[in-house]
Length: 63
Image (cartoon, rainbow, N blue to C red):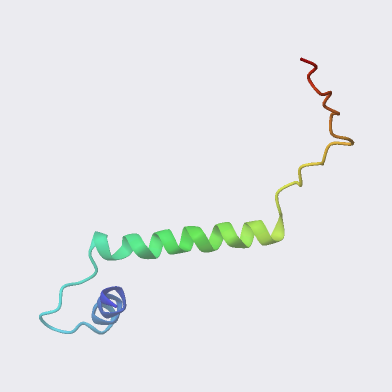
């Protein structure tokens, strides 16, 4: 909420309100990075790992 208030006060220019600070922009930057990552994963999904043709057969241990 403080980020929204900082953006509005910076654009409109309310007197006595501090402009956006570095710490207000960090959550916005992290959110943008997550959004970019999710868009890239939808467009280009990671390659699927092929399943092995057959699993090895285990022999019982004879005592």
